[in-house]
Length: 245
Image (tube, rainbow, N blue to C red; front, side, top):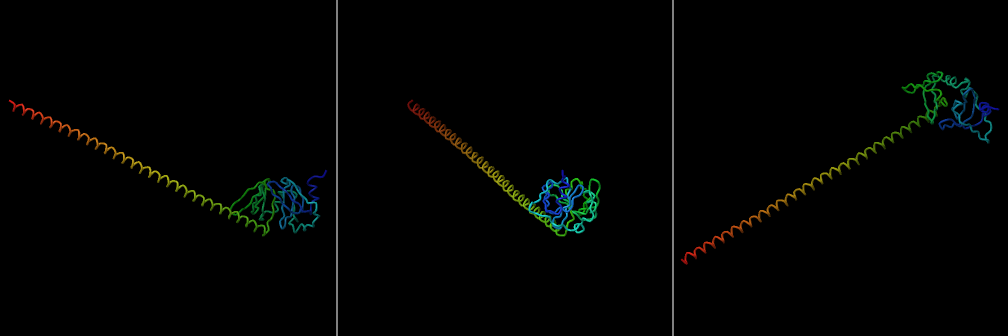
């Protein structure tokens, strides 16, 4: 029974879609099948894809064999039977690697060991397990430009999101300030109402005291008048009694 490795050898020269882990799809022509990886040409790029990450390969029945470029033009004049060995041929070169989740990393390949590769990315040194590298390729000027454009788009999107966040934060701060202002206004209004109520209560108490005092005065006056009247009456009676004698 033919193995996948053998079947892929039969696909050399045909356009296929190579589906790998993480949702990545590489549409191109199979140009070489080796020990644990396959080489596929996509436009000006040649991808070296680890076999273990390949989920499926799709070949359209209407496509026929397509002549491929020479191995020298495809940068395959030197090929290694293992993925790590092939990666080792690109030391000191600027390459791109794909990882799961459509994640790509661009940098200068510094060294390759048995289970990891070292990349120089700007001012950083990155240690990447080779077991996590789905594929690698040597970028062209066009692909680098596209990648820079994608990074610029991502930065622009990030800047817009940050600006929107700042604007949202500012709007939230304004709303919070307005709420706080309303709370303070309500507190002041409540204090004013309390002061008015207290003043009104004091006025009522004062009025009640004045009314009580006035009533008491009237009572005193009535008592004095009654006393005077009684005194006059007694004096009159005494005078009449004396005259009668």
